[in-house]
Length: 218
Image 1 (spheres, rainbow, N blue to C red):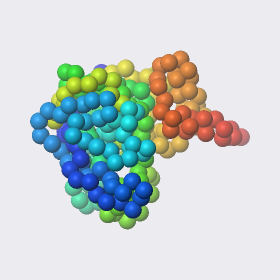
Image 2 (image 1 turned 180 degrees about the vertical axis):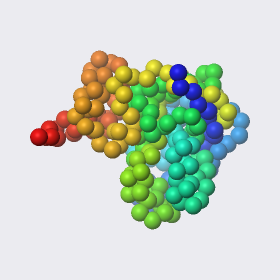
Image 3 (image 1 turned 45 degrees about the vertical axis):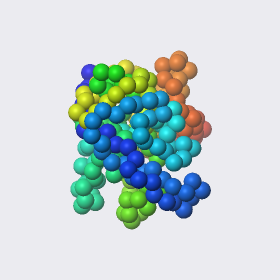
Image 4 (image 1 turned 90 degrees about the vertical axis):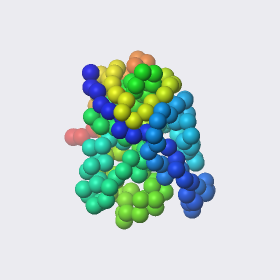
């Protein structure tokens, strides 16, 4: 069993105005001290300005790995502190981008989360970070982190142990979904879904179906 550490729990610090139809973004998240309650739609005290693109039951919590943050710290020449990328959980010892779709994370004594899909960067993320061509750079690096749904609610806090459990045999990761699935990966995901071994988000299912429509290599 893989184990890691919850380095920080982050929730919205301030809403920022945007130029899109929503009008605000909750990407400005900061680490908080003490226990935080996790409920089916995410962390107590957190908010998502638009649940069409963020949040909801299938994207309740966003996790980002310290290894990926360290990569960006070196690339950007600035500290990528917990919450800077809009994540709720900063984790160490766990490859969030390389997490298998459907694997479960047990955090502390009560909370269980399930990996659902990769994060897709947006213009609000780029504007908040203030880095040139950020969406393209973030996408090309494919260090996207993972969204998770809440299987069991409870309380978590920085320093809690994370245990990776119930890793599906299909082996397809969040980063692989974001990069674009090949036919074998798509078939594995859809077969696991058909056997009720994993629940696919609409986005992941569309990605798999799109891969099957692509012509096979000669």
